[in-house]
Image: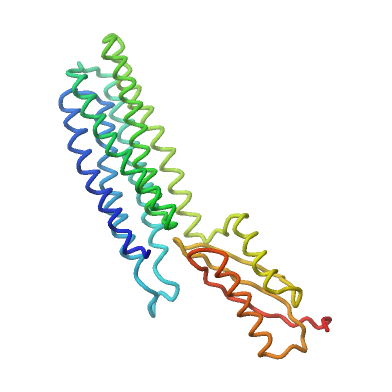
Length: 292
């Protein structure tokens, strides 16, 4: 399934975000709770992230052209990075609003109904997050995975907020918990933002594939060579769901060009068979003067 076909999942994220924004701001309006307000603000960033994901999936799905010989899959990393920036901005605003409320307390109202409304929004986010995460892992899409983690952060935020406000509901004297919970929410969101930004940076900087995947590549190459040559160099990187491998091998110097080419084709075929979707592989041959 190409990136363009994954846009339906981005639409699901956008529709869910709009629904939760309406619900959570309604909960804040009823209660005047800054922690519920922080939860609602995070949903705004969810909506923006979903729209960015839609754009990234559309762009990543475009085929290679004269200006982009390796395709447009790195657009996914820009999307994930943008989500990280949005989450970070939301977290900073939440912490600022919580500090203001901590030093300038305000009465809370109708917490019961507000919590019910907020819980409905959390259920919607949880269901959508599970759907996006499953699709992201199935199709190796960092955009969908980032959006899923973003929504799950929202869910855990809502759970923490609800737990604290239940205490306030039972013990009104503990109303100071409201801004403290909001600050904790902001700190947790900052951690999520850092993880998204780091993952995006790794992709944009062409970080090598994980050791486990490099081991699979190495095994595929050595199996294809079957003792006829030696693997002397292996470089790898990833762009969206697409993997790239550059392989250096030595083959006997007296081997014909045709036979060397056939062995290189076998190595490339083995690499492509090792992963789905198939990596783009380039094999470079060096002559082994000592081989017979």
